[in-house]
Image (cartoon, rainbow, N blue to C red):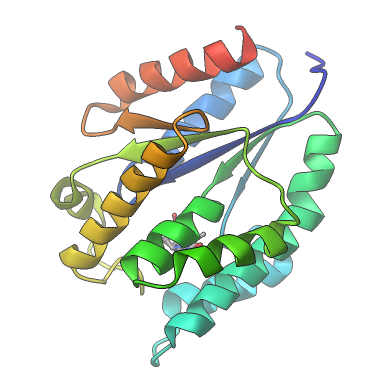
Length: 207
Ligand code: TMP
């Protein structure tokens, strides 16, 4: 099915919120309806990004907050220009697992970085490319943590207080941009959450 323009939909939420499962379900659903999609993620969609992801999630020596932020931004700059923009020009529906809001939530609210500066850096990294719609999967931090496996990566192994700050940061963002960011209660079952996702995307695409 040919769309008049591309759509850029991002999936956000704390570790363990279930967004990746929902993105995969949505891609299948859209494909059965004949839509052309591209599923992608941050960090790690490009070759450069895969190297950065390895460092970001598994480097075992101390990493400064600024170095961490700039690596996420470098991954995003490469991703936006090499993968996302061309797919949107091809009129695809781009489904992206994490994007700019993750840096505001994690490095801004979680690490208590300067949010104004992060907003500017996000703009530089993406050359101003914003998502058309963002689905924020909101889940109690304790439930999200219990969904994670035993071997946690560098970010997942931050304490519960960090994850609570991230969650509250996301909710604050949703309050600031209610048109773009739709909050979905992700404490429910996969099926219940997905029916909410379908409702929102159905409205966006007039399905
Ligand atoms: P993932 O587990 O959803 O693939 O994400 C990787 C981790 O990176 C996750 O803990 C969230 C974190 N992250 C940030 O801290 N800042 C960012 O800008 C992005 C994209 C991810």
